[in-house]
Length: 119
Image (cartoon, rainbow, N blue to C red; front, side, top):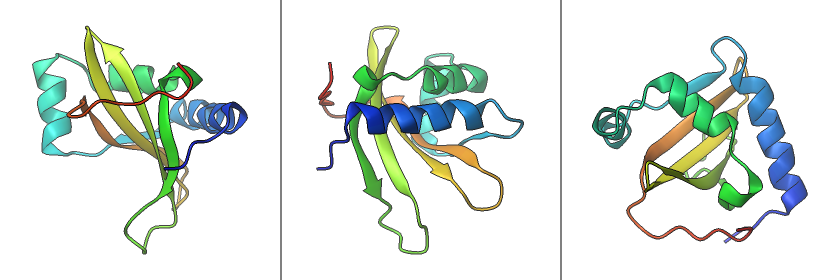
């Protein structure tokens, strides 16, 4: 498992902050577990953006980890965040294909414990 330094995490999160604020700078994957979580916990997409925009080093779990699909040249970063006393699993990357965009693959309650190396 790759554990980044605080500086590497802060650099990534700074890039996320810059990109996510742009028009069309954020995309949440339309996956069943993401959509079910948003409905169950009444979380609008703008709130998902907010939770990602304000991630801190303390929310970091692991990464960057290269995507398993070789056709993509990107890395996934893994975070966790308490929302209404529920720990959410957050998996994001920055897409450089075409327009830069923060892509969130996972935003749902964690199925497994999440380790936080900087908590």
